[in-house]
Length: 194
Ligand SMILES: [Zn+2]
Ligand SMILES: [Zn+2]
Image (cartoon, rainbow, N blue to C red; front, side):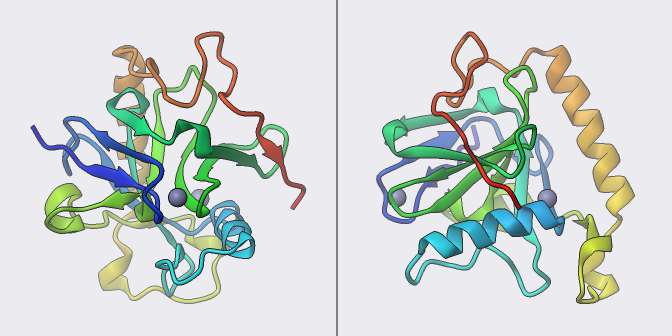
């Protein structure tokens, strides 16, 4: 079964995904200002010589998958969370080395968008989770993305919504490494005012 190794840059936080392939998840690059703010927040905390979070178009390469298929095997105590507004997405990262982990909605939603920095591919990213399907939320960005790379954001978003509905029906919001059974987050999120 395909299993992708997960680790923060310093190696304290580690885990894996289960049964995840290009078909079972959804790889896309998000250019929304919130994803950019999250990346800038972590870069501001200091990431040393770690691989940049944003690409040359200020996009974040993420892999959307059901939260119950993501396991954290060590370093749970080093996980932190930030929200850009009191009702914003939960944006998880490792406090040991400020590696972005992924973005989730509330505990009842079966979804995480895992940020590329947290995935340690054994072969290659394309081999394990496929090509980037599209750049999405591009209206907020300054740089023009070449059409060969851009893909169809409406197709990619429709696919996300379809997957989310399937995962919801299958009850894949539990178990979650990031939420307690009562739906509260495992750590108190830091609320940033943009
Ligand atoms: Zn770390
Ligand atoms: Zn985004």
